[in-house]
Length: 344
Image 1 (cartoon, helix red, strand yellow):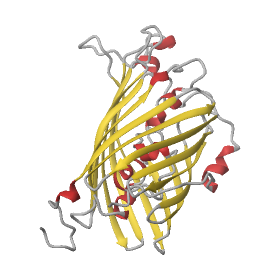
Image 2 (spheres, rainbow, N blue to C red):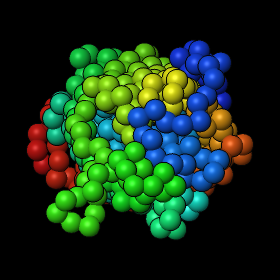
Image 3 (cartoon, rainbow, N blue to C red):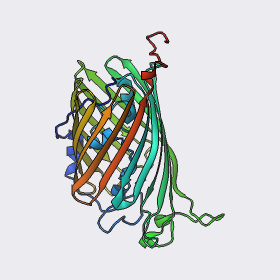
Image 4 (spheres, rainbow, N blue to C red):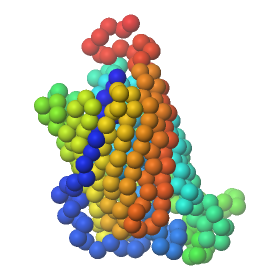
């Protein structure tokens, strides 16, 4: 069995996140000047800060920068692909009914056939496909390619390239203009993309005594200075065994709002009967002034997995985020071999 889901987490906070919690939160995103998704919901919150969450990441409230291996790694910390030996092919779907947000896609991670681990993820989504008079009608394509290498048995480094294209056809209450709906396409009835950029992520992870894992990562490090692709830096500390992990993360967001804001999170998982992951998590989002609880369950066999997770805000803008994921473990077929083992 891969070590992709062995955790049970306790809420705590890293100094990185705590240091920013005292700063005032702004009501509107600096780079993304779109109208609010609802009267009380900042667009960055509705857009989920451009982040893609797996079932495990959502259920553990995003506290995965240290222990988030396998298919969670390309989204959270690319260095963590080298933490475990897997070849996973997975599909995921996200639904947020309150905002009309949907995300669909797939991710593949191979850390077993070569010492250099690799992953690729392709997702696409929609946001606020409601009333034409106020809808953002936003859609996007997100492509990621990540690599990780174990410098030593206890130290891993990783880097990930990302391409994001965002198109917004809805005008919203701001009316016609790029700030609300993008530039008109002179050759059609639609609108040109309001963001079309490449960037990169990077991360490191350190494993100490097969028990303690420390991870740090940064997203969108070219600093696009745009709320649709915010630059974030975060880290986490986890205590991990075969059956559980205890982790807490802090994340600093520099572009989603007018001032840097923090997200502090913790969560965990216990693997019941070696097949059923039971997950819980908590997240505080300073920018949206929200608190959220999350949880998830699934079934993991030798050959496949099927999982579902949900997050619900208990304070702040109302949002119910649901993620569903299915996967196939190619290493179970015997078609792959590790670089230290002969091919079957």
